[in-house]
Image (cartoon, rainbow, N blue to C red):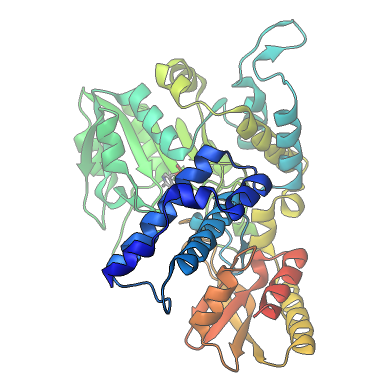
Length: 465
Ligand SMILES: *Cc1c(COP(=O)(O)O)cnc(C)c1O
């Protein structure tokens, strides 16, 4: 087969081809780049010829030229597509980590756009005409909402944990229960962050039981911090005991050692009041007297990626002054998104405006209405899909409230001739990919995370099968 190699065209031959100048004219690509891509496609075809993997009958020069141009056009198409693309999340998992966690409120997006398009008061005080601090932009809102004395924001909660440890406990000991040495999302380990911060981890208790006395016994003159970590997506069932926060706060005061809690998700909205989960709010946590608390901006808060640190003024000031605070600072878009998100809470409109809160609270009746609409519309246009509604549960996701199961109705879709995996692939390859769950021979659609607008787009995706 390798004698077909003699038919392989050279770069200059392809560049002289009228197809090359046509592409150059239409595709807004420089000649250099296009030449490089032509070379790349020639290499691909050469390799396929050598490995005998090119299934073209009666190979000749002309057929190879056509084939290379086909590959080239595909490459151009791919390069024109964004790498970060919109998808439709029909899994019902509200904080889907792989799909970007929280989607933002209209208010947040508008404020981010406005901030991006203009100059802004990022570090400028218009009243005095002097330099201002970016920390001041959201601090008052966070203080008002959480009741904390002071607050600051960094890049994400992992950065918050790192910065707190670095600023408060570097070179000294931090006491943590063995039951709380968790790994989150496969890349965040408390023990490793601790090591990076040069704080010394002092583990106490056992995986399932840690008593207040375990903390007390571990305290010595080199102890800098008592730390509690939210277990997030990890839960030990059965014979367990955690030291009560009140007891920890008491011994922290007795020994004059600050206590820090990594709350993970951290919610300002009281989901418990709506019979969803048992997550204490940040404001409840602040009231217990914990000195420093950190949580994510893009989990239950429903805002942009950020790490919020709240607590006693003296500690927050110390953290703000640390050199790393500059390294881990957030940009103006994050601050804009966060400001608008926090203002929804201040106006008591979070359940209407913030998609994360809205979708978690969404009633199963609303979801059923969407499901019925979907089936009605799809089956009126194409009889090859076999759909029915099932009662199911949706998850919050993002390692948050793992035990919570939200009542939902899903649509179970089968196709006369396509398997469930074939359907999932087709949906994923839609111009706007639709992400679904696959269960046996069906794909499962949970419309908790799908807007009415997106519902229409999903129907169109099915009709393109
Ligand atoms: C999610 C989580 C983190 C990491 O927060 P990011 O905002 O993703 O950096 C840290 N600690 C806990 C307990 C978490 O649940």
